[in-house]
Image (cartoon, rainbow, N blue to C red):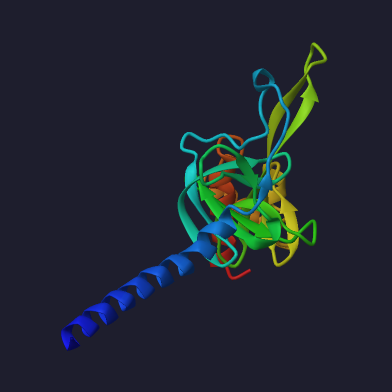
Length: 215
């Protein structure tokens, strides 16, 4: 009788632990799939609003949890990541306030409040004392036949504290630090940099040199 009671107690304990594990895991998973359905009309032949990727899987930080190997579509027009529901049928728009960052196809996006109180998503290319960021945008523009098509635009800039310093040409690199224009031109020249050839690599190199100088 004593052995039988122990057997029942063991099974009840095991059942309780198993149930507890399920209860603990449900909120984490259900929060990810609690967004609103994403419905957007567009003609695929004229482009789409999504960030171009070869591998659509990545990870995201959402409501304090990290989710790995999740299929992610990043709408660059509305600036919001989209995921599939648990059945993989519907697209869900995540709640911006609960989303901190996401990575897809080796591109890391972070949310920073620069233009709105809700924050915007930027690809983080480098972060030290300063940050090198890129904002991806897709907007519909009329082509030569007056047909609206999605056009991808990339805006790169250095983030200095909360100041946005756009980097659209090499001349912008020379004004990153006030009073250091000659020194910055010398760094650019000595390192044989070419902004037109590779804007991102050159921008990161200049930022690293600026940090090295302690500016």
